[in-house]
Length: 485
Image 1 (cartoon, rainbow, N blue to C red):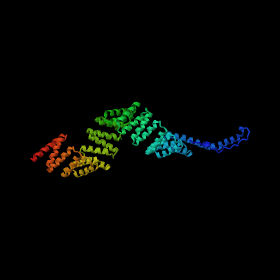
Image 2 (image 1 turned 90 degrees about the horizontal axis):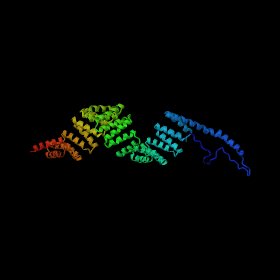
Image 3 (image 1 turned 30 degrees about the vertical axis):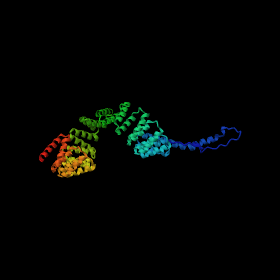
Image 4 (image 1 turned 45 degrees about the vertical axis):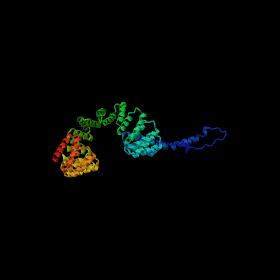
């Protein structure tokens, strides 16, 4: 809308006014004396001043109404063009800048939106809605400090508004400051204690901090204030799952599903909770329903594959991993898991192929090197196995297990001294690892170092909790003692 300038504002004289002479003394003032002047001002104002502003104002109003209608119809570009015309006619129009900024947000032109809101604020510096709009645009443009500065200004202008604190809290939460967000939600709740959304978002912030009991308390309050709130049940289910209350999590996911049956991810999450609770059949059923509702659901296929593998259905697991990889061919986790499933059914070449691809995609994937080393050792490629264990040790030098794996490969290849050195390192890192004592004892016995071998086998007999290993070590101990006599 065009804002007409008041020609008398600030004490300035109207450009068409005239200075009246002081009437002579004792001469009474008569209205008719200034009537001609008033008539002249009226005529000049109507024919000279008014048409210029009224015409612009009328055109601006027409364009604003047209732009609003286009915006309601969803024709953003046409509406944007109309607001451009309004701003050309009236650069000081707060409404036009604000609405053009809103359209620019919708079209993801966040910098342009910020410019518009800034222009509007120049003429309406105390309008809270403009600071909030600019804050949201800056937030979406990842200008977090600028967004928070605008939220701070909005708080200063409206310190008793719970919604303003909540919006600032949301900005902090989504930018990785859940502690700061909780502080703002505390203030919002103080001002609006019956607003369930404030409790919901504070509960989510507690979840991100791992404060699961505090999260549950907030989500309980949401459900008290707003019983059909599916999001509250979902988040409370996640909190309960983290506390290993799997039955409680399953119940909450079930209630969320009843409230929002179209949400595929709720089925997926309940399936995970059921898998963690040991109910693999029900978990597989949930993942299956999620796949039926959305065939391109990677998570559901991958999760069902995991459940099938845990249940012992390795062929079914491989089929699901393969379907998941069709949706996301470069997914490292699914490809590595399929490689392990292939290894479990002794399709070792297929396992190697998957591990190769994982390493190509993620060159520092220690587990893939370790798994490939095991397969190479099993197929007789001992030098290849040792090379892969070297990579694992480079990536995880404090992990005892790759030293033990490399020791096994060296021992099998005849490098007994090298094997003993690696078993020594394994025991240094994990002094209670019985298998390392067993491997070292065997290598020492083969070298004829019987006293050292007896010491290792006796340690196993005295300390190991693996009955099979204890029995084998005991038998080897007797054989060495017989040989010595």
